[in-house]
Image (cartoon, rainbow, N blue to C red; front, side):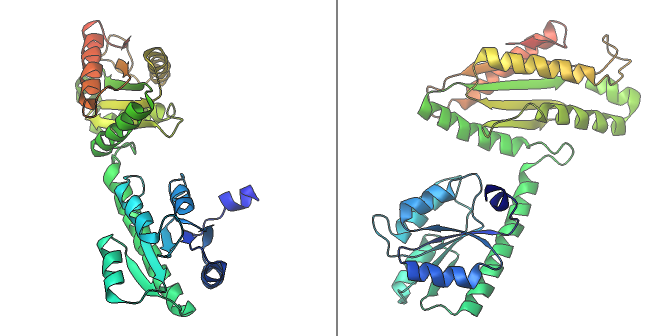
Amino acid sequence: MQNDIANDKRPLLLIADDEPSNINVLVEALIGDYHIKVATNGKMALDIARLDEQPDLIILDIMMPEMDGFEVCKALKDNPATQYIPVMFVTAHNDASVELEALKLEAIEFVSKPVNPSTLRLRVRNLVKLKQLQDQLFELSIHDQLTGLANRRRFDEFLEWEWRRALRIKRPLGLIMFDVDLFKPFNDRYGHIAGDQCLKQIAHTIAAFMHRPGDLAARYGGEEFVCILAGTDLEEAVAIANACRTSIEALNIGHEMSPFGRVTVSYGVCSQVPTGMDAQSVLVEMADKKLYLAKERGRNRVEG
């Protein structure tokens, strides 16, 4: 059963309503084209929406016990992890003031009950297509075109998010900064196409060490890369950097202009348990200083 759900490639809908008869009407109208999850109250809807597999559309009733649809919508939009999930209200309310309130909360659609199944299917289809297009554009906007890693914009956003999470749960946050040694001479000797291929191979190697949701590898700029390691102390982060250094050296990419005869990378590593909301830049500065030290001490080494 779990495998069937995991292999279901249909768009995912979340329907939240406390009336089983209303849920049945919506599920019957939509089940053929969508994988559907159901919540019978607002808190359950929020819990499902926050899972790794996020819905492509949330269909909300307004009147629900404990937490009504408006409260759910506001909580979704206030959370960076769920703010872009589109919300459609399907409700017995049909007066303009209620619809206006829904739109103020950034709901994307408002449908009054009873619903026409054919019209509902068309509305949902159009909203899901729009969400999929937005997802594609978002993915393009946060990834480096050459390497496929996260780009600088995504790194900055992710670091802020993980810093705040680490501050809340009082766990360390590790950071590794990488710089390809003598990369300009490599480009001058072998050409920019070879340089691009070199960066792609290094990026692929770095990405292989990112295993958890709180880990992120990004291209910081030029031949510089960076990794965020959630819940990782300095000893663990240094160990990961050393393993990565060995793996990149083992690629054996020839570099006649390097004293090592092959492409190597220098690493600056740090880890810190956050103590303030806006101090994540300190982590970058610490890693950057360690990277400078690795360069100064001969390159192809880890400093932490």
